[in-house]
Length: 288
Image 1: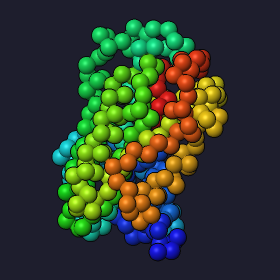
Image 2: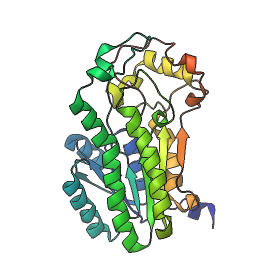
Image 3: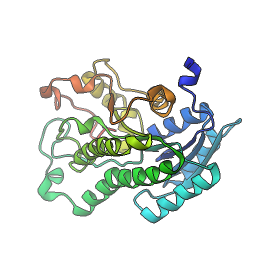
């Protein structure tokens, strides 16, 4: 197999949930650049229309569906629409997710009563778990159903470095949701391997996206998180494209059940450094 063939995704049928912005857009973009037929699922119709318009220039086959990934019947219908239009579903990025708000510590290490577990709003917990964990289950389930019919495929979930450690400044529901994604991916990979369905997770660190109010766009916040990184900086969304293409292409044909960290070495930081910074008070987590 040539190098070009190893990373060939041309004509593959792909779905990217939460693909209208941030990391999801990067996934959709690299697939489209590689010649895949891409359908973007997103709840924000304006962003969806803009992204589809921008990515479908030239010969790229990109279209979109407004879908709430927590709505099981609507998500199932959307998968059926893609399968009908493309004839099959080969690659699915289960990427949709939301920020969980502030944790029980402020960025400078003070206690934040609103983020303490006995004061958490139950509906907020339910929303974060539904969007960041249950929707991944919904997406994997539907992807597996379609991929079994056609002899296999690739499922890639967006987890987080939040699955690997605990952090007081990140909203409490976010941490178990992402840890659940990591464990769900391993479980699904173990089950679906016999059907030639590879299931993996990407675990990003801080990228410059819109999550947490887009706080990584502010220099003081980027500086704070850069101090944690072994590379001394946070990442641009384009830097996730290579990993996404690898997991969607034949190059990763023997990789399944993996939780691949892409964080510039941030998780290597000493634990005592976790609250030794004073970024702009944005009230949200910068973890992706």
